[in-house]
Structures are given as structure tokens and as C-alpha cells.
Amino acid sequence: MINVLEDEVRALHRDLRSKDAGFCACERCESDVVTLALNNARPRYVSDQVLGGAVTRTSLSDQGQRTALLVIVYDAMRQVAQRPRHDGAPAEGAAT
Image (spheres, rainbow, N blue to C red):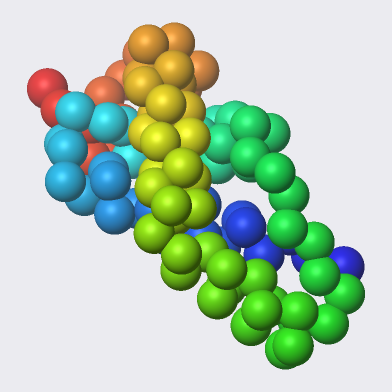
């Protein structure tokens, strides 16, 4: 059983982060963003990755659902940026 939403959240996070260098790209911040976003989104579990994953990915291609997920991911990014848990050193990809 897997939550196919995780792949979509990671892809949206990478896309948003690439468009705004102000967000940290370190592994810890990425993990925190993905965790927070997944905790705030409705999970999409499938037991059959081929068929179930295809159906779920199709439903995520709906513009309304994709926009809602985009908002959740961006909100998670803002929250993590306000209180990052990485060490004080500038992280790779972070704005200086």
C-alpha cells in the first residue's frame, strides 16, 4: 500500500522551489515540506500501483484538485521557511 500523493507533492515542491530561490533546498527542509503537505492533504492510498496509481494520478490531473494541492504545498513551504530546522549554515539552493 502506498500514498501516490507523495510523488505529486515532491514534484510540485521541486517545481515551486525552482521558481523561487528564497526557499531552502536542503534535504531536511524538503523532508519537512513534504511531511507537512502530506499531513494537510487527503491521502490517496492504493494497493495496486499500476491500476490504482493510474486512476489516482488521473484524478490529480483535474485542475481544481491540482490547484488545491499546489496551495497546500506552497503553504507548507512558507511555514518551513519561517522556522527551518536545518543548522545555521546556508543550505544548498538557499537565497543569501
